[in-house]
Amino acid sequence: MNPLTHEELFGLEQYARVRNEFRAKVLAHKKNRIVALGPNATLHFEDRLTMQYQIQEMLRLERIFEPELIQEELDVYNPLIPDGSNWKATLMLEFPDETERRARLAQLIGIEKAVWIQVADFARVTPIANEDLERETPGKTASVHFLRFELTPKMREAAKAGAMIRAGIDHPHYQAETTLPQATRDSLASDLAHGDSGGEQRM
Image (cartoon, rainbow, N blue to C red; front, side, top):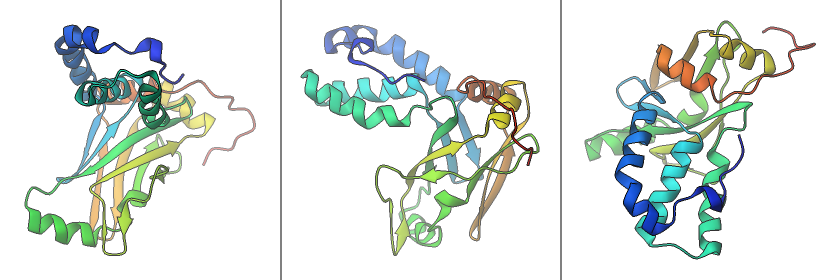
């Protein structure tokens, strides 16, 4: 997918007029891109629309209108848009009780590398995590991680052709797996470009 540009963003005054309608559109879109993995972990799959919403909200919150500052926001969020060969997602770990949260985040170091996606019967794909910055300390992991799942051309072709997609976590202190519902599967398949499958072996 192409990165977002200045020209595609609403100005502050225009966004104030369309925000309610635009927000409703984005929230409806997001419903099909959120995958629960057990009781405390969710994957929020990102795309151009979800990233435009993030940028628009940041510009609104910070009252940013200078072109160079807008470009800084674009530079932060554009890398989270899938490019046709991958899926990009925010992993969120949620524990409402603060004491439990501290204890569990200490147990779950490395969880971002234990997340997996599987298309049909291809090999599971684990993510490249937190390319922007390190999100864990020796004592605990973060509650938010950014993940990139790179798919082979044959995986992409299978997903676009309607293959089942599963997701899960295989960590010593947290295990979960699920089959993506049809609407989510279809939404993620729309992120992918057709790939050249010539010469690649099925795994």
